[in-house]
Length: 461
Image (cartoon, rainbow, N blue to C red; front, side, top):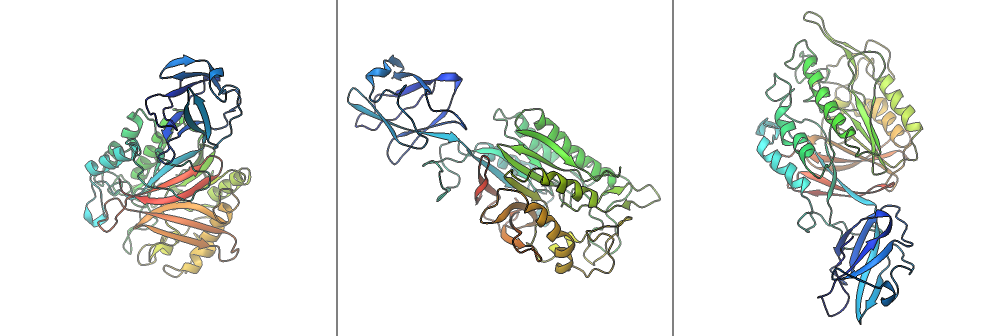
C-alpha cells in the first residue's frame, strides 16, 4: 500500500491513499506550492489500471464513489489529477523514478595533514555520513532549477558516490603499510554497512599509484619494496578491486564492473566501467594513459610499457556502446592547474620521464618533450582520449561530461580537441576536502536514467 496524504481543499484532516496492482510501490512527497501529492513510481510503470483500491484515512471506500473513478480514469505522467470524495478534493501527480544524484569527492589525503590539504579520518567519517543522509530531513542540500521535467519540490538524495583519487597518505596510511585502512574505514566500510546500500566507488590518484618519476630529479616512482614501490601499488589496486567486488555482489548495477587491460601480462592500472541506472560510467586510475610495467627487483628497475593496448581495449568497448549515456572520470584534470600538462606527459617537476620499452602512439616513447608542454599533451593524449569519449551519448550542449580531482580546488573547464573542435569535454574538477579556501567539498550531480548528467552543483557536507 502507498500512503499518499495531501489534499486540495480546506480540510487537512482526511487522507486519500491507494493500493497499486502488480506489487508496484512508490514514494510520496507534498508539493508546497499547490498542496498536491507527488507519487514517484519505478521507471516504465504502466499507469493504466495501476490503482486497484482506494482508502480514506486507512478505510477502503468504493472507487466508484470517487469522481473520477481512480481505478478506471486515464492517468498521465506529470499531470495534476484531482479526485473528489464527499465534496473534498485530493490532488496527485504521478512521476517516474528517473532522477537520481551522484556525489563526487576527491583528494581526501586522509590524515596527511595541512601540507596536502588533508582530511582527518574523523572529519571524513562525518562527510561520509552526511552524504548518506542527504535529503533525509526533507531539506534540499542543493536546489536544481530550470531542469526540464524535474518534479517540483525535488529533494536530492544520494544514489551513488565517487572519490577521484589521492585517498590518503602516500601509498597508504603511514607511507609504509599501504593498506589504506584510515580511508577505507571512513568511507568504503561505512557505505557497505549502511542499510541504504549506496554504491561507493573510488579510483586512484598519483599519491596512490606511482607516477613514473616523483617530485625530484632522480627518484623513480616504482621501486622495489613496499614504501613508495610496486607492492604499495598492488595494495591500492587490491583495495579498489575488493570494494568493486563487494558492490558487484550486491546487485546494485545494471551491468557489473569490468576492467580494461593491455593484455601484455604486466602490472596494470585496471581502469574500469559499469552501468548504473541506465547510465555508463568510465573510471580511470590516475589517468587513461597510466603505463603498465613489469615489476622491479631488488637490484633491477621496472620496465614500462606503452598504454596503447589499454586505450585500444577502451576504444573497442566504446565502439560497441556508443548509444549509452556516459559519464567519465579520472584523477588528472584536463586543464585545471598550472602544471597539469606535465602530469599528462608522465613528467616529474624537472621534466624527467621514463620511455616505454615498446612503440607508442601516445608519447611514452617520444624523447625530447618540453617540460609541461601543452601542445604535446594535447596531441599525444588529450586529443585521442577526447575523440574516444566523443563517440558516446550523454553529452550536454555537445560536451562530454567528465569529473576529475588532483588540483585541490574547484574548477569548471571545457577542453576542445585541437584537431577536431567538435570533440569537447566539460571537466568538473573537485576540490580537496581539507583545503581551507574551499567553501564546498563535493559536487552533487543530477542525472536522468538513460540520459546522463542534467546539472552539477557544488555543496558542503
